[in-house]
Length: 316
Image 1: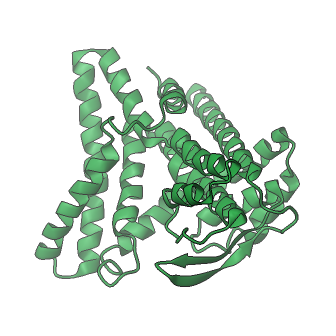
Image 2: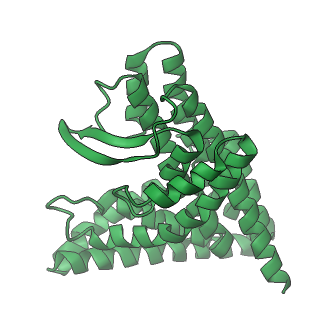
């Protein structure tokens, strides 16, 4: 089966099934192996930065290599087994339905007037303190999470799957998992996690910039401010701490006519971020649903564009 069909089926599976906790997701095992490997590389290699580089190389190459071997082994049993395994592997790397459901929990709680439940639901999406947030700030957090995670949770794994099949998708998720595990500016990981953070930034650079035109097109289809999405993405995309997440967040802010960014608290410590977007429309719960729709439509446009380009190239 062609990779294009595997990607389409995998995306449909994610849209229908989401992220069942009982399903064996490779990312969990990659994270565990990375933590075990950290101890060994730190012990063998005295320099923390070089130990981190070696850990990243082993995890990324090992994840892609093992995936390729499993796909090959399944194909020796039956071609259909290889196709099914490939679809399931790609499916585990996509998180559109999960992202949508997390944001919906915040929306439903706000609709019911249950701020405490909304704060609890948002805490499952973001790292900031949520205990004292009012409704506009809860909405901001949910919309920001959907916009930021559109790339690393949805379009980037789709792109790597389109380009490299199941092994490409897993290689990307390994990169993403390494950043989530080691990419912190703490005394323990400042040097060791340097490679993981830099590789993640590099892996997301193209997906983030390829996703933005899809957000603009999706905005136009939805009747939102497509021109604003493009303008704010250019103007404010670099204001985020991440070189990639700010672009999609800015495009969402422009499309919806809202302002994101600003003051957040982490462990009780204040962090003043730059504002992204113009405060044309007050933040309301409905913006969460609009962000979800924009995320899904942008994803569909992204996937269709990538698949069409791959088919055209294969015909040349």
